[in-house]
Image (cartoon, rainbow, N blue to C red; front, side):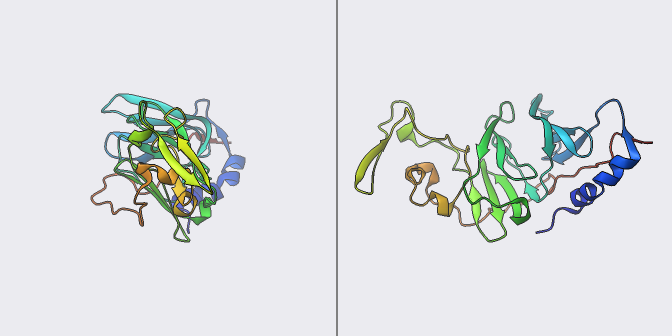
Length: 229
């Protein structure tokens, strides 16, 4: 997989730029990704690293996802979904997720065996579900966008039988809520998460997205906010 040229070129020149230029007194802000005409990601900092904000001008939302150290995701990124939002980072160690149009955010881990940044082809979020495709063909996805009603408050729970022992997934300890974990088919198989109805019919491929109006990669200018020495 090739890192997106704009990010790769910027990172390659980072040390050279740092040696030839000084910083302005105010940290620069730049839009590094647009979802559509009113939603975008804003990076505040030097050398393409810093705080990350999510902005929705139509809903009047501006939320800070990272206070510092965020670096742009380098692979293909398609994100038409608006209620469920999942933001990857440079190292692909997990995702920062919102399920309320960007008002509040939580961290969603990715399962064991996750690909490193060089092994990721794309990350797509559509119909309130995320799909990360690895170079070896593995697909890491979030659950369908609902919680199994059996483990909601007042539900009966989910009974199961594993290796000769019975157990119950109870509403008091249901595990992660929908959309808050990314699993591969291999990791899901044989786990108790496989019993949850929101993991039925595991996707076989990334859904096709038509007429997307946003960007297909993050973009960052590492020289923004620098002055020649």
